[in-house]
Length: 209
Image 1 (tube, rainbow, N blue to C red):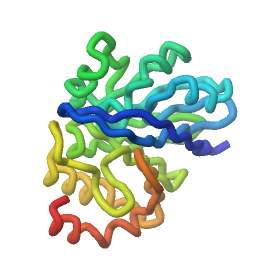
Image 2 (cartoon, rainbow, N blue to C red):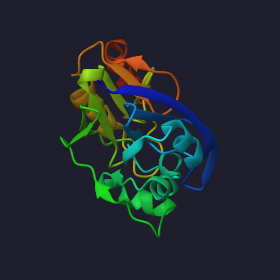
Image 3 (tube, helix red, strand yellow):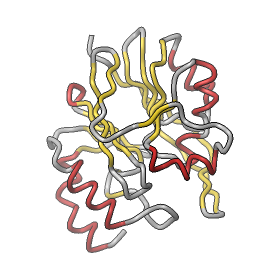
Image 4 (tube, one colour):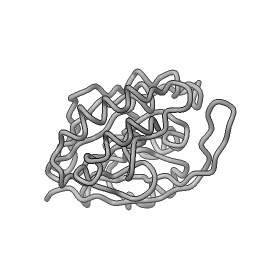
């Protein structure tokens, strides 16, 4: 059985550089009826555990370490025994939220994560954060982009640890090379497709987001 994608929206606060904002986050669960992985354990570990419905959680994968994407990760890991995986370049951000609890494992570019006979490939896509990653699942015709690419443009780069030129390079070189019908499932908001976003690249660069 090919894995399916379940979607949960959780709400909480994003905090960075002394500011706080109310946010809704997309939590993605990829798996079948027996096992799954969670992409971005945001805000509400109990709600995510409920959505798992008794399935074995193989990993909690963090697309990056802004607090709104990782705040529920330790509690979910404790409840399920699943390891928390993060790209090491985002450890400084992780430690701002969880100074006393390190991730359990690392994510590296090209790494493959398999769940329910479906493989997701880690794409290192820095810019929004140094250790930002996307997860490409060709069998599902989907890429999970965290806060790297949204419907209508790249993720924000106006705060600490971010870089607009870097995120543009990541999107151009790692994401817009994927098939145009690839669904883009984002960290916030509505999904889009690679084909819908690719023609806008030059405009994003002009606007300088």
